[in-house]
Length: 374
Length: 240
Image 1 (cartoon, chains in turn green, blue):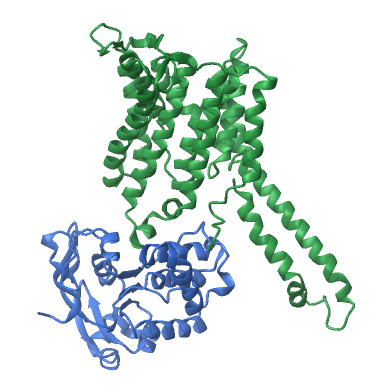
Image 2 (cartoon, chains in turn purple, brown; image 1 turned 180 degrees about the vertical axis):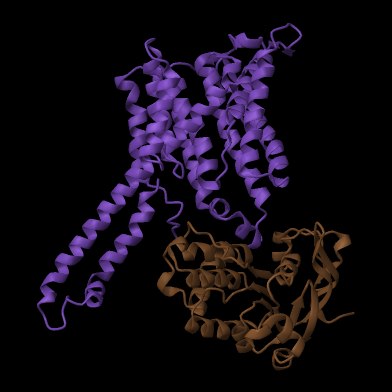
């Protein structure tokens, strides 16, 4: 079985077109805002992979985003060169997630408690980091700085050349490569049997256990991978903002990524990416005015989307496109069947009509669901 | 040394003050087909779940041996990996996936990536799922989903198959097909069928174990058990 309709397949045309647009974007606009949108998109992708395909909703995914940001800042202050700090910013959140995930999943806690635990983890980190203002709260040369955070650390440099910092346009391209790379990794994961088992777990955990799969091991693994991606996003955020504050662990940060993913569409990879970019842009635009509270409008937008298109924007569009394609295929089948209707034992019979149109209809029916997911 | 492939020794399961399974000693031979019957609340499904690891056991619950290995305390996936295929009482399928995807996940674990697709095709042919192979399982009728779940079990190519109420909710013609299928499966595998449909059990023509109030009431060939006065009294009652 070459394709799995339930997880979709890689659509290289769209991917390459998106890559070209992202690569050429700096020709027409400043890179500062697009860079943060890409970083948020990567953060949402990390949650979308875990939530949409394994059915694991982390209410506190910002914990790993924040850990990535803090790890980078602390490590780069102590090490000086950015290569190891970037790797640590991916590894440390992954290790923390592996430990927390193993405790949750091998402990067989329910989804509700998982949500509570993940939320509590990020809120504990928020409270702790907010209370680290004193001089005693330092890791090596890096002072944690309490609510003011850690400012003024070195940004990413060319590996082995700490004197050549990458910011502005190079930073934008790092964000582009990170997002596209993580998207490809996610697609690759889903195309492997590991990804297919994850989808199976999302559908029916008990059955997957009765198929002989160790469900806690799979859940822990995807939780870890997702946290690693969130950590990378946090690292890039630290480089973009050039300051890390406890706000990265805040409830607001935790909620935003969930809203982006819901609005974009759970169960797709592209949905969370587009949701984060679109709502991130709205957030930035709203941030420029002081008339209406930013969070209030974002919350209102979420309520509207959930009520109007509960599956999210991308799945709704995909559903519309599939319906349209199916309708066209059926109409084409009817057109072909009409002349035969006048022939002896012709198309008046539903059976014979379906037989005449079967190769075309079947082909479309198979293609559409596969192509519909992205 | 017993020649049983499945053996329970004083298997006991209590829920609070209720003893659902009471010191049951049971043995199943290689390539034997056995039916477990009993009225509602007799303990047959609890017994089934003890065999499959769905009820977590400890040493205090007695012993469950599968091919001589004590499986008490094992998780379901560990028991399945011993070559056991399990069909649950309520169809446990992956509703959002297609029939082929369901079968593929089962075949992949048992046979590996390279052989999985061929195994899926074998099971589709064997169970007769060709017409619905590409349909989403959640869209199927109850009987079709039952057959899909049996297909999932077969895709694992198990040597021991445990079927909990496989005939529940399926129609007459499908029951006959199911009986034939189970008898075919039994050519290469030991099978335990839990069911309370007497006609279905009679059609299988297997040795029967009757559960009543958590314990084994009687055991023997179908014709003997189904005419046993005690069985008629506790199970068939005035319907006989």
